Amino acid sequence: MIVAVMAFKWITNPAPREERQLEVSVVEASQQHLQRILSDECFQLVDPLSPDRKVGKTYVFDAGGDWEVSGYYRRCENDRWHPYLMTLDASHAMTHLKVQDAMLRESAEQNELLEILP
Image 1 (cartoon, helix red, strand yellow):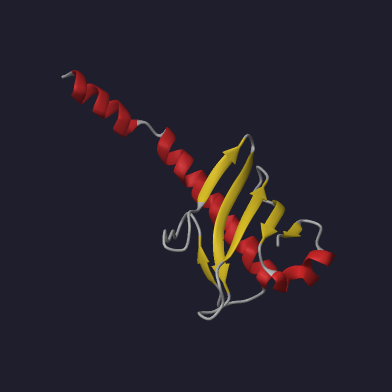
Image 2 (spheres, one colour):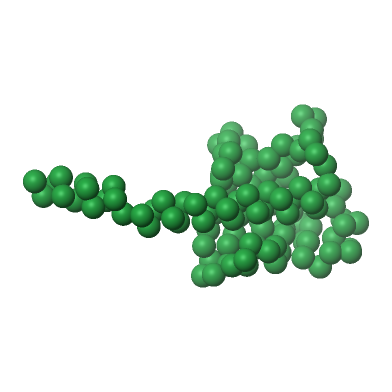
């Protein structure tokens, strides 16, 4: 009986579903920011909503009001996977983006939120 009551409380607890919905909205916002920066319609993306462990681990993390989303992207099949780490504020606006992609060096000179890693 105790197990049944505990299971019922766990199933009816809305907190995990609400947290998951918030995480999904954060990752979707990060996808939109990344698409704007890359300005490429056909890039492939590996992120917490579409993970691929063969490419690498991804995560979405609540950093005390801010959010961090990591993942990988590539422009086409012949491109290598580029890791990224995006920081978003509570309103899902991008505050920082670290990428390992030399093709974005010129964009980084014009955008102080973008950091290119070697």
